[in-house]
Image (cartoon, rainbow, N blue to C red; front, side, top):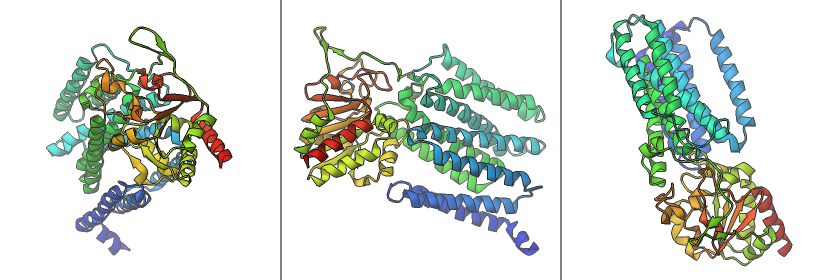
Length: 472
């Protein structure tokens, strides 16, 4: 046993095993790129994490395993409970919290390293700089993620909360962190500088996220995920742990790439998302004025009447949004699609990159319901709307708003949206005629070929299914 433990302390073997864990992470991340292989990717990533944890526990000088075992068991119980109980509609909030936990974990490890090795932490410039960055980015990620969670959960208003002089305040906070880091380097035992960095980072996370409107939360969640990866990578440099460096870099890079993709999908720069203050979250009127000042009134219909049109349709495109998540209608939507396909109808799904409250929100819901991945299309499906008999919009608002193409005064002008108005008939499933999360009026609701089916989306789709059953 002593010989085995001695072997496990060999640096070459430790790094080799860490490399194996990293390979599991890399392959797992690749497999997560498709719903067909996502479960396998998740299992591979979990295996990599298990290997990394085990080798760390066996190779480090640990005084007692008591607290570690308590922490592992507590985390396992809490994680299992949350995973089993959290509703799919609350998944964005959960992801935001997990980003925050990853950030604060990195910051706490950096704090522990500071208190443990104050005498040597300044000897290596890379270690010192990455320790400061781990504290800064990790704490910023935590407080920013808490704000994002509050906006998604409704505790904090979804509209942008513009703080007066917020940009100069943020610059001052960043410069203050840099100054505290320089002074700490000269007086490493002066913990007050560490606390100053932590305090400024907490405020910075809040002031960076709170001005961002709820409509931009998917981008913010993706960016915070990237921050948490960067914090992990910085902690890896502090601990001289290659696995943390590589894994943190993977998470950071993938988060930045996803953030960039989502910004392009909205035709906006990241700076505009972070500092534009878009996404009011306010409710608007239930009718739209015409050019002459008259009010247009949206046409409504019943599930039975809509089902009659579906019964004779040849091509149907379903456009899901957050409303589908709220009503948990993904399973009945799949049932409706199956029923239409049995009647010879060509059914496809149009998924906008920023639909929902987090990246890939609609994809996750539809995959859970068993929808085949090859039926999901993004903006590439736009050419097909003009040849489509029926479009069924389930709780989507801004991604189908034609004002984004025609009205320069609209907040989302220039954002690529689905050309749903080109279809022969458009059914919009909503609880009411109020605007969506971004608080922008949607003229689609008042077009001649649009009919509103008001009410809970799940009950409405169940009404479609019942009516089609009666026609069989």
